[in-house]
Length: 115
Image (tube, rainbow, N blue to C red; front, side, top):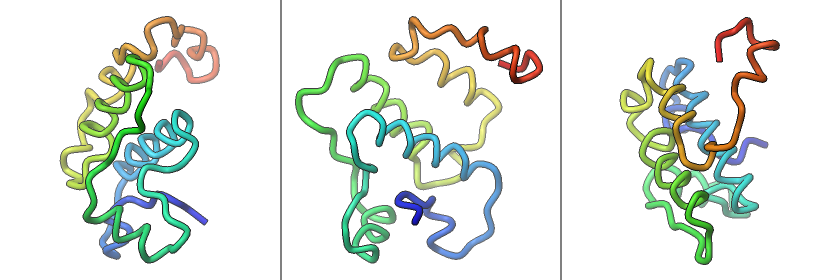
């Protein structure tokens, strides 16, 4: 079961690849906190949270992780899909303080130099 579907999917509207930016935000949040941002054992409650609730940051989080989640919330977990549609998204994500020591150039080997 997908635990963090994008709002446009829950509304049954058409979707584009901007859904992938939402999914990346969900994945990063879950990797840092252990649970998806809107998690509930009750699926209907989880969907309601995705559509209407504000994100709540976990306490005692490192500054780089908090900085990442703040930016993820603003860039990737925005409910308005038009706010997630920008060509600058990959560059913005790569510039997050959390990825400061990450070497994206390593992945050029696998992605035809597009990183």
